[in-house]
Structure formats: structure tokens, C-alpha cells
Image 1 (cartoon, rainbow, N blue to C red):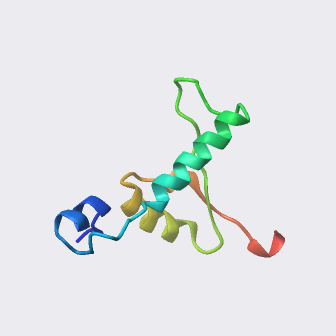
Image 2 (image 1 turned 60 degrees about the horizontal axis):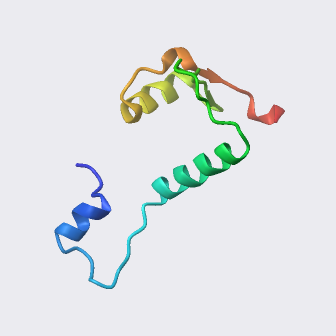
Length: 86
């Protein structure tokens, strides 16, 4: 089962006509892109960037769970950190 998008909820009549749904993830991405463009920090290179994930618990457990959500294996990108040091 997956979460319904705003369009799917609208099409299924799951909210009233006077309700405006906002996809906060999309809005956050747009705001971030605008800020990065304004500060000339957009990556315009054609090469793929690096991914790193930090876990305060088991990096292996985090990687297994996150890989399901991200749709790719992140085992090599995940590492444990001692949160007490930050």
C-alpha cells in the first residue's frame, strides 16, 4: 500500500472542493532549488554526486531500512557516528 498523492485523493473525492492540498515535499524542493540558484550553489556538472548517510545507531540496520525506501542499496554509503560527539 502506498500513500495517495494529492491528485489521487482529489480524483477519488477524498476531500472537499474547498480544500487545497499542498505537497510540502515538492514545495521544500522548489524553495531549496531557488535558494541554491540564488547563491550560485547548483551543481551543473553532468557527473553524479556522492551520497553519505550517517546513523547514530547501527549503520547496517539503517542501510537495510533506507534501501527499501530509496530503492537502491546504500550499504556502502552508510556509516555509524557517535552522536554524543556532536
